[in-house]
Image 1 (tube, rainbow, N blue to C red):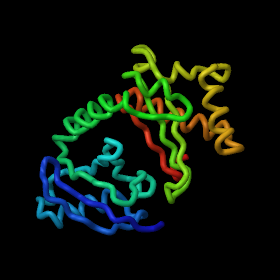
Image 2 (cartoon, one colour; image 1 turned 90 degrees about the vertical axis):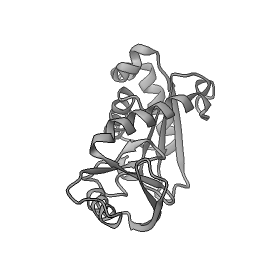
Image 3 (cartoon, one colour; image 1 turned 30 degrees about the vertical axis):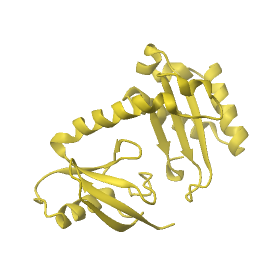
Length: 199
């Protein structure tokens, strides 16, 4: 899939603008184009937030690399409101964390300190994997210590889960996935979603 129908909305506004975008279009360029279409001053600084994940998109990525999908809602956020938006969505994901379901850890979904990794392993979104961990306060602040070194029991469980689900997966790829997930956990995100281009 090279295109997707998505909607854009200005932060704290209700009016939406639907557009068909190329997934290979860079986020920064698209943000500037939508800013102009909405009649916003070109000198004002905005970023795009993805409501499905609560993330502010990296402006140097393409929409495909940023994990944007069909029917997503993107919010045009003024520079001075970015931290406010992040805090709002981080809070939303924390409050929803206890309601999440998982094949590998149904019990974890009932706990407030559950963190979910969602791996979209095909561009069509038809094949996806979910993995949960439940962290105490220390590991929430230092998630990299939860998985520890190569002898870590938790890391071994994660490796086995990926290889049983996907077949042969390199140590380099596993470490890359864990690095991104740990970074997002330390920033307060309850849900981390990775697209095929990020795996």
